[in-house]
Image (cartoon, rainbow, N blue to C red; front, side, top):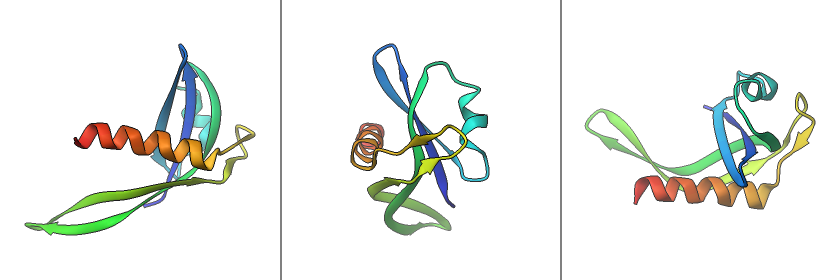
Length: 93
């Protein structure tokens, strides 16, 4: 599955929202407070392991790229990828 993302600035923090690629960036942005500051596509690179019929993803790397034509924002590939990667590390450790 492909994903898109938006980074919002809210109260001095940068907060990523990740969502399905079938939804437009502008539709997602309507539902959130804060200012969108970057947006694009996000790819999660990793391995899948069979866990008794279910697959668990061990995310190795996050890659952000592209832009949002509906918000007229570009991605910040290195900054956005690192921000999203840090959030996943906190969730899993």
